[in-house]
Amino acid sequence: MTENNKKKLKLKVSAIKNGTVIDHIPAKSLFKVITILGLDKISNQITFGTNLESGKLGHKAIIKVSDKYFKDEEIDKIALIAPHAKLNIIKDYEVVEKRVVEIPETIKGIAKCFNPKCITNNEKINTCFKVISKNPIALKCHYCEKITNENQMVIK
Ligand code: CTP
Ligand code: ZN
Image (cartoon, rainbow, N blue to C red; front, side):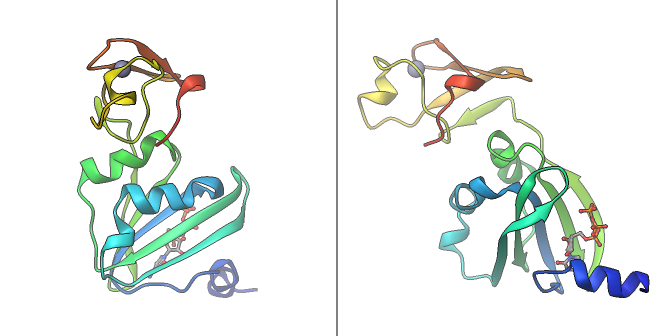
């Protein structure tokens, strides 16, 4: 089989002309990534596939957003739930850049504070954390100063 045919066989979701391909998303986090990036609220053409085979992840998902290039801080928001996600920037059908996601220094929203007495769990206030460790993840609440660690972390 030629290299090109091998690529086509791998291509379970059609190639895009221009835009961003977010690859290596854990299948269970697909819809979280969609909402965190606000992809349910934009009019760009979006295709996605899920439960695709992947050596590393078991089952992965992929999202292709046409004519959209994300800012670093938008993309870094997905790092908490898809730390191995890879971004491919596509221009005129070619991959012109590959990027990995990085856990940001501060996290707004996305995760819940582990402290049930925290104001963010009792009033309509968005969470805000300082990331005090990235591996394993530990988040310090801006409001109650309690630490939420990776095992305790619940994504909103
Ligand atoms: N892709 C796409 N449209 C294009 C070019 C690429 O949707 N016009 C997608 C491919 O389907 C793939 C991703 O972008 O999911 C990365 O493409 P490429 O680097 O060619 O694939 P791989 O070498 O398999 O990349 P990696 O191993 O880094 O995932
Ligand atoms: Zn708190």
